[in-house]
Amino acid sequence: MPSPRLQVELPPWVDGFVDWQRHYPRLEDRMALVVELGHEQVRRATGGPFTAAVFERDSGVLVAVGVNMAVPAHNCVLHAEAVALMMAGARLHSHSLGVEGMPAHELVSSCEPCAMCLGATLWSGVARLVTGATKADAEAIGYDEGPVFPESYAYLEQRGVAVVRQVLRDQARTLFTEYRAAGGVIY
Image (cartoon, rainbow, N blue to C red; front, side, top):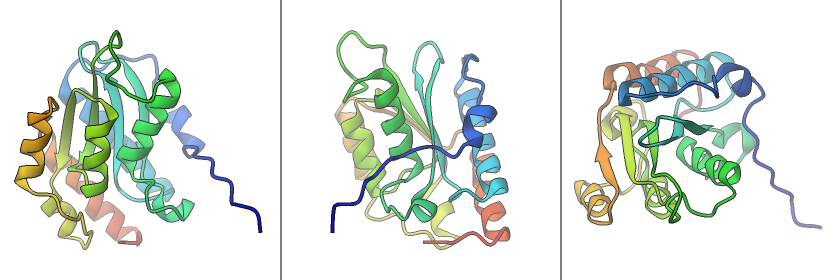
């Protein structure tokens, strides 16, 4: 039996939903986009309630978005942050978002990343991580975010990744109650 092929594509509705020409000058503007993306993801039932985006940190230019596709794609690594980072690398034709000569990038996530995505954040080369809902918010509805500790964030910062947490937290955590009410799979 030949090896399976893997191709990662965002749901078809994403390009019509996202304004790729708009700049997002403030962190709140960037998180608002990520949360709106999450509401659309839940409404369309195309994956889990987690969403993320990569921006140029200083200009607010949107580089890529990601939505959680683990369940529909049958792929445990297709978390929103991982997808956003993959899409950013593909758009910029770079294995790292921290390559010299490239603008500084940031990852904006609707929730504090799980252990896997926290590791991907470090290795991606982003200069800043911005989060909305907390690990406790995700775990309150049954998600297991894995071994993420206060020391995990301290380590990121020691390695040069700035961390800003709980931006629009109340709005971001509504994604969980909306997803649960829609009968979404908690895994």
